[in-house]
Length: 400
Ligand code: PMT
Image (cartoon, rainbow, N blue to C red; front, side):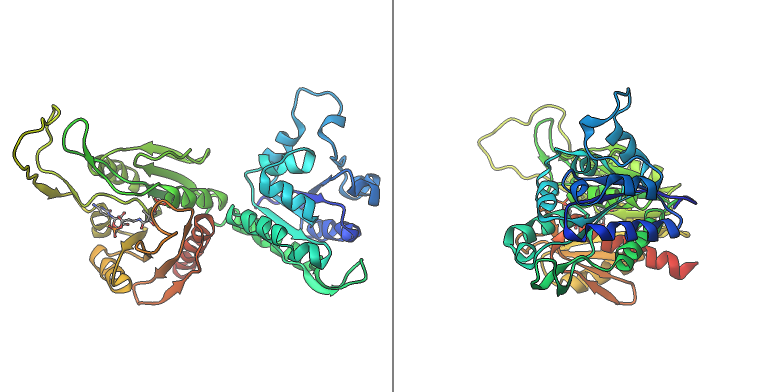
């Protein structure tokens, strides 16, 4: 976090809108330079002039009401803030954000930011508990957005129930925690592998697996959000690499080994989420192997175990492996920790539907060498990445 972190507070048209002034003040007292963004309806409830006076910056409401300029204001703001807080957030705004609708300054800013986002909803209880609202919140959480849940109490509509904006102190302290976390890996070089490898039998046929790369790519995104210097080495996938990561594309296990060993030298943390093939073909034909009338047997040879190799010369590095298992998940994972001399293993039961290979979600056991285990729920790979990086930061904390 910079000495004076620049943040934006987005304000929607809930009755609790008056509390946004207090939230802004607490962030300012914590040393933040706050920029306010309002929806048009929020500006009917409290005066933008009040927020301009409070923040010392012109309040943004509508992208098309700005003075003509060669700069695109929401992009400039998106690139320069370290945190976006939306408090209060209405059901309408949650729906827009969850669907990618960008039709005003705040929703456009949300799509453009790469910094962490914190949302504090406030609305009537029936609207908050409405299935659609809950689905929108779940979706946003699965994309890495954090929430300060509303509290139960007396609501503006005279109902008693869930939906009251969380206390200003809770919102600000969660925001400050996220600002701290946004630099928690600053200065650390993190090497992450992702995706499958392909082992060629001839120019057109290969041995591979079902890895999509999603787990490794999400880990890279989360490490970037925490300020790390990230190198992502990936086998073939359909994914766009995170913008700020150094990206190395490889195809075979041998290429992955070369790239990892070369880049691991400068890494403080290595996370091997790639599904590296354990075998390759003993003979690789340079021409397409022709069909014949007889059965064919091919010989497979073991590939080098990249992680085990790193474990032999570990030094101060933190090494994290994954274990993709279909049976005896815990025991097999524990054996891998010892065999590869690593600090943490992330075990996933890849026989379970909806998690592991090629899914958006995962459910993992984060296992330490002494057997301590953190068992996660089934969550998006973005949220699983947060838990894995929290565990890694715990190891860093113990060492320092
Ligand atoms: O890519 P996704 O679709 O998102 O799926 C995610 C995943 C299921 C691929 C991921 O969560 C996962 O489990 N990755 C590791 C898969 C694997 O190869 O597991 P393993 O148990 O065979 O290997 C153990 C560890 O050794 C892994 O960290 C692996 O990267 C590493 N290894 C394996 C073989 C080899 N030759 N060299 C290695 O370094």
